[in-house]
Image (cartoon, rainbow, N blue to C red):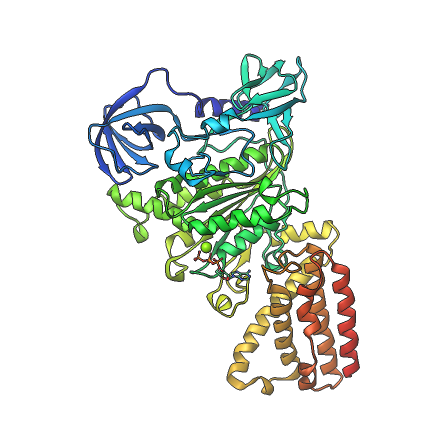
Length: 598
Ligand SMILES: Nc1ncnc2c1ncn2[C@@H]1O[C@H](COP(=O)(O)OP(=O)(O)OP(=O)(O)O)[C@@H](O)[C@H]1O
Ligand SMILES: [Mg+2]
């Protein structure tokens, strides 16, 4: 109960809602790109949104000194003049959270972006409040009954036509008491009242401020893996549901492709894809890919359980700053309905550039590489909203956050990369040499890590895969040993190594090319089930054992090296993504062939 009360207090204070009764207006005194200074805006508060000039450009308050305030404009300030009106709105950047998000594209301020011109000419009211969204009619089906005593997170009803996952209308976090009225089944608009809790009216869409984490009950113990469908991650560097992961990698090393694969194939219920400062055509590719793909679970289109927040490189830079909080707020909204959500941000470096750009104009004392001194705390405000929780309504649900990092020149000691590492559990480092040799995904096995390997291993053991921890341990050891011997072989020549070391080299090659390599474009290989991944790795390890056995019984290493092991290497592409049994059959076939060498 305490938790619930705390939640109620928090939202009341966060007051996302309507504008102030009396507008407080002052004047613009200086415009420097996205940095705008204003004076005499009475009672202005930090993070409060201000509408600037005749175009009502949206800006947020970032500093207040006496009767002057510094604002960060989220839009182009080209037409803005000194002396223009600056009107405080009484609210923070917030979104209207209701049906109509799935399958849609929004900008960083959560305005629908169904087509580019809409974005440019849209009414400048922030937060989803455009006529089309508000005018759309949804079917509301009540599930609670009048007289029931309800608290935050309890279900009030559903909206069956709102996308591929069931849309649940919940008691907001600041409402508690008796359900005094609920709308009968029927057509409702987003702003329609659908229930009354005490005298609190609950609408189909409720506002929420992007920078305020949505409340939950607690964090349950233990860890549950997020299955990504990418073998190198699921077998070697797993990520837990509700954890944060980062993908640092130099230019063109495959960050976007890897993140898109996760968006398509991970076993989350809802995906929020934040395209942050990346190329517009890449966003179009994401949209295209998701629209064409059939969702294995629902039979519908994958895009119908995806929300896209797009702030591409041709859009105003400062809206990037908002977009990652917008993305994670959308994710928390679906988490609260009981879903597992993945937020993907590509790229957090482009987001940090927006922070740097603003700090420079503001004349802030720069910290490392010109980034503002609070870069780390801003990153934390994003990554720390990841979590696996018990929702206020009692469901287990999660927000997993995965961010790409594009260090300039591939320099991993730069601030965004190093600061990010403090807040994440899994690091998937993309290696330039692997990418150049077209080993994709180019996830390095020397620089990547996963901090939850032990707890996730226990989960696998408890859930039918007793071999998971040992399999992973053997694979990482084999990779390291093969790397070491490979370096040695380059100096002394492979043929001068003892037979069993040559088998390690052979095993390393099979592991890299037959298991870790994964072709994003292949129907069989683009996605890999946990069972097929385990079977492929088991096959390679069994082949290594068999080869070692042959060496011990006196077979020459060269003879084994010349054996055709194409059956092992081709299995990932020739066998269906869920067909672990066929992989095991193939393993037996290969072992039989090796036996014939003896
Ligand atoms: N898993 C993969 N399978 C096949 N090809 C891939 C894979 N990953 C990357 N590639 C190839 O590498 C190219 C670059 O990948 P991608 O755009 O993902 O890199 P990036 O790291 O996002 O680049 P940037 O730094 O420009 O954002 C792709 O166009 C594709 O040709
Ligand atoms: Mg990219």
